[in-house]
Length: 151
Image (cartoon, rainbow, N blue to C red; front, side, top):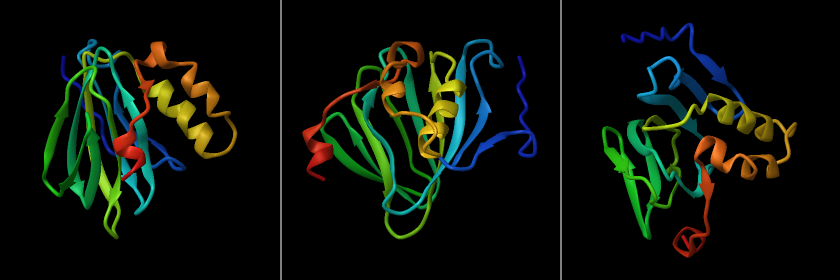
């Protein structure tokens, strides 16, 4: 199955900086992908894990600070990272410029509605507690991480 998403056709969620590219229904269940732009000092995602999905990060521009397990690493332009299932991770822009990242989740559940819900949180229209209530639905399980908290 060939999937083509023209940049002019991609759904852009302005408040969260997310561009939705392809979700699992369009890819025959193989993957979901989006691009995100993070402003300096803006947390991209708090510590969480996916029980089923692997998450791939490819830094298109800028730098991204990433928690993977208990390790903090910084990814730079052109760096590629795969976080396997059941591994706590979090991320945020590092440095003084925007971080632009391509994300791909494999063996993932459909996630576009999760990002739309998150957009509502960014806009102040949705209670953040609604995200936690969708953990199993979107395979996005929030966890505590002393390593992330103490960064």
